[in-house]
Image (cartoon, rainbow, N blue to C red):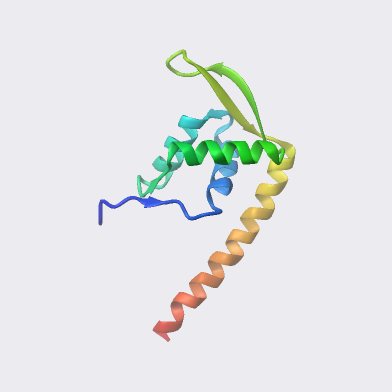
Length: 113
């Protein structure tokens, strides 16, 4: 296995953020980024600027909300939570991703037939 870490595909970070917040509950931006990297077994690299751009975008759409709180090391941090609208969007996005992944699987199998 290679030690290379991949950038996250455009358009997938928002889905990963929504799913992580649904599964884990409220998290701050750094915690979200680290959790996504852990779940990918360190294959994906989550740029801090990218995660915060995603969080701003999701908040503007009303899919997540934010509240100030204290982090594990007692520092002030903004904690993000998925909203009801976000859960609805997560369902739609996950179904779309499953459909696209199925298509990609079929296309990649073409050379093996």
